[in-house]
Image 1 (tube, rainbow, N blue to C red):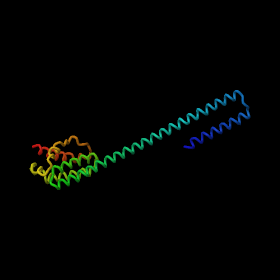
Image 2 (cartoon, rainbow, N blue to C red):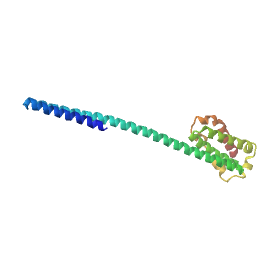
Image 3 (tube, one colour):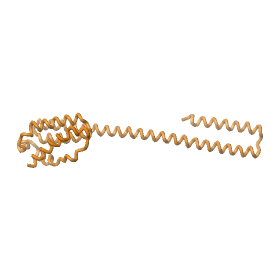
Image 4 (cartoon, rainbow, N blue to C red):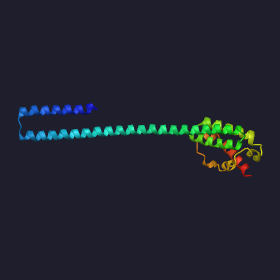
Length: 197
């Protein structure tokens, strides 16, 4: 950056030195004076144009730097959001497994539903697979063949209402979820149908 200012300064100094030598040899006449003024105006115009070009280049460079930093910041925000959703999903998964150990199977499936929603937002295939396998196991082992009244006996009073309020259409979209979508929605829908009857 210093060279941008040093080089023009040196060239201006040399120009003035050349003008001084020329004026000393030729003498100052009206034609020489007009030529001198025109030369100085040309030097000033050149400096102004040079500064404009330099400012334009610096401005473009600054914009590129800002855009690059904005992209990095957007990526970091997306990573934080993804990790946050993944942690929420893992927390709900552990909660669902723990609740199923206490024989509260509808509540466990309800927690796994939320675990899946957060896993979809995180777009994590492994987490979705783990949730689905636990959900299928709980459903097949403890819900599928049992009477719904005996299953609800161990549950909290409002779990039926909370489970019936699940809206499968509100689930976010994810390509990774497509492998589990049919199976997941079938289990939730079957439990909802049985709770309504």
